[in-house]
Length: 574
Ligand code: C2E
Ligand code: MG
Ligand code: MG
Image (cartoon, helix red, strand yellow):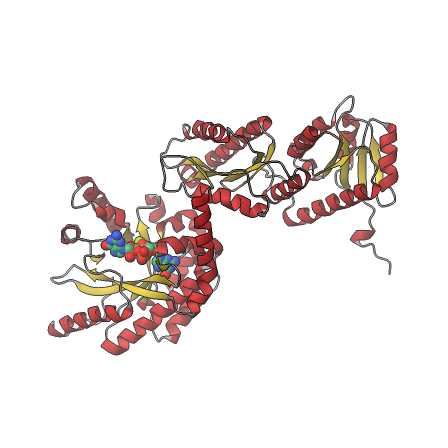
């Protein structure tokens, strides 16, 4: 049987040039491999492109032509969702024209005169392959919402641009809209989309004045542009204009710049660096622009070391799980009710590294799942050991990272841990941070609901730091709210802070869930919380997080107290 393979099909290529000789020459070079059709100006070309859009593989486009020039053709194609998928190689000899056409969506150039037929053929072949390959991956070279490039194409273009202009100084710029989700939440998704479009349009205007290209994905924009000594001023003005438009105080446009990129570093990393500068602004509201500099470079190297050392540190037991007690203060004496497992990293080179440093880092590359699983295993086996030694069950809550929620085996893993250690689902409690609910409420609700139906107790961690609406809260499957410690901090000195906590207690009562106050450091705070009928307290007032061998002293003390309180319940849960 004789079947046609993909390679056997002679693809159609359109040659557009006003000069007969040029058309003939190009046709002559490629006609053995391609089915060539011709147009002598932009208008004719567009007619042919529209006619053959489903089978046309490539356009070779001259720029200077009568009736309608190549730029006009590129613009028409760029604004058409279907036609912008057809790759265009521009036929030119001028650098400035090349850059402009790259920005308008051309994928490559062929320089006149056509004296290197093999090179021309190779470029034609490569562009078609690239376009067919990426069509398979993502079906479009442009972001539909904004008309900017898609991320994959953007990186391809940047690389190609560098090949042509290796000595050009370039800046990698990243823009991020911090807390865009707030706008989606308050004013609806379309309002968020409108903002994305407005920023994209302004970026297009910016690029009309500078040489460069841009892409958009999610709430982030990347620009790769020729270095400009005034870039800080230009970008600052750009950002400020937008930030004056945002009505809520948290949403803002921020910008990270990796100036005069090091071209020995690959293109992805150049933008990781711009993004790193951008992320460094997260808790800094004094400025909206940051540059990748030696300090950030050092931080990058430090973080790289940490990421590289996770596996060996797990093997060498440099990770240790600490336990911080939670006390039930509702009765006449505070009773040990449960504990939270908190990871510690005693790094062989850097000493104690805070989870506040390494958890977000490991969350970025998924490694945190491995670590979390280690913590859960340790915690489950610890609950068992304590029960065996003291006949007291101290349930332990463990922290879940956002990405754990996506693990389809999450529930299965927890059930296994319970089974292997002979525990019940009530013995391991799960802490999920509030912002994870706001980021991806549907998925998280489903996963948490299912875990809860198994009997796991779910605590919403850092409550008050995210932006859950009351409406959303009432639908969430949770058993307890853990008040963010920043609310507790000032309750003894600031009546407003105390009032906030009072409001949160009312919310919890309305939702019929219990409350845990964390970060309680003083007797006064503890008393105020007791007056507000807050039942469970965690914080330095009772104890810092402790290694298991020290935590056991608290259990021994509890066991003694219970012994003297005549047959008290053995099992205290929140
Ligand atoms: P978190 O889950 O909200 O944990 C509470 C943090 O508050 C802990 O910080 C704890 O040591 C600290 N803390 C407790 N009481 C007080 C107090 O009275 N005053 C003050 N100032 N701080 C107090 P830590 O251990 O540094 O952990 C920071 C964050 O790192 C945790 O916040 C949690 O989000 C994350 N984390 C820690 N261990 C793990 C883990 O095993 N897995 C995951 N995914 N995240 C973890
Ligand atoms: Mg926690
Ligand atoms: Mg917390």
